[in-house]
Image (cartoon, one colour):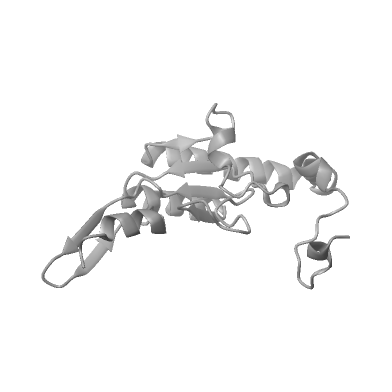
Length: 166
């Protein structure tokens, strides 16, 4: 084993890791009773229907954009995520609606901003990924020197926009 694998608390790969999601799917099929599996499908459909009714930019697993949209910057194979849906928030109301829909359908929510989370926190398997990169509002009150900005900024974007504002 490498030094990384021997480090206490290191994220060790499962011996089944090369098989990834296919192995996990097989386990779900074998271990989840059919009645429970139908509840999962139902909750995902409830989520999709709710999102379609209130959010303008939704990406579902059968959409062509899904494969690329679900990936975060960190492409380590042991933290790859597969959300049940992705919302590309264009307004804070999109975020509110997405969170309400997820709560209504019993689905976990994760936020993706810059997508740099080391442990893949920006993508949640079997949850709803809310991509907030579109929330790019930015304002500086010159009198108070108070800055307000949207959640979708990376630090680099903020540094660039703050340059020249003291």
